[in-house]
Length: 243
Image 1 (cartoon, rainbow, N blue to C red):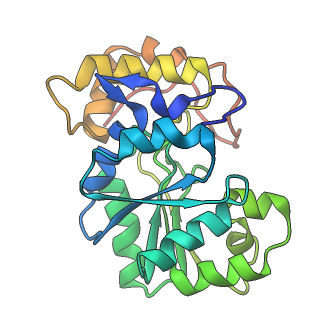
Image 2: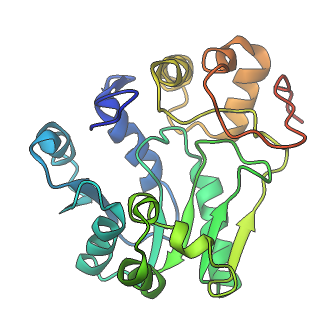
């Protein structure tokens, strides 16, 4: 709720409902998940968020420290008795359930400790999905001291590949130039445009529908194109074509 660049962003409307609801609708479609929990800050500012989420009878709401998101996530894992966590942040209302399923399937098939999508290897910013074993999360909760690692949950894990072997999935085709996360007013305007175009007729839209939309209307991506994003070698910033 207290985003510095877009305060209250999770409550911004998308196709008639708060952004967080639209994001959770997509999470609900991920096959292979037993329970969905929202780890929300235990603060007065979260009251509107909790009220909005309380109407979802399939969602477990768990409160934890506002700044120490690592502890908040670990509390949610313990209270739900999870052995595997699929982590998706609330600023990703365009996350594709099929992509998240592929990360979960790869994690399970290879017996991994930690798996994630990779912007560096071609996934759009906003399809971010992490899968990790609960016992590894609890280790990070106990050991991490860097404030960055406490705030962003998994850096303690992926900064130590020698201790925690990671499975990093890449996207084909390469869509690193698609900024699909909501962190600024420009991001929100872009995502709102997508929902206005697609949700009424295709509420379960995913990558193929986004690809078709951006191919026909490349100006949509340009709405947030000037927002600073990670820059990688080989990034084709003007490429909106789809196979």
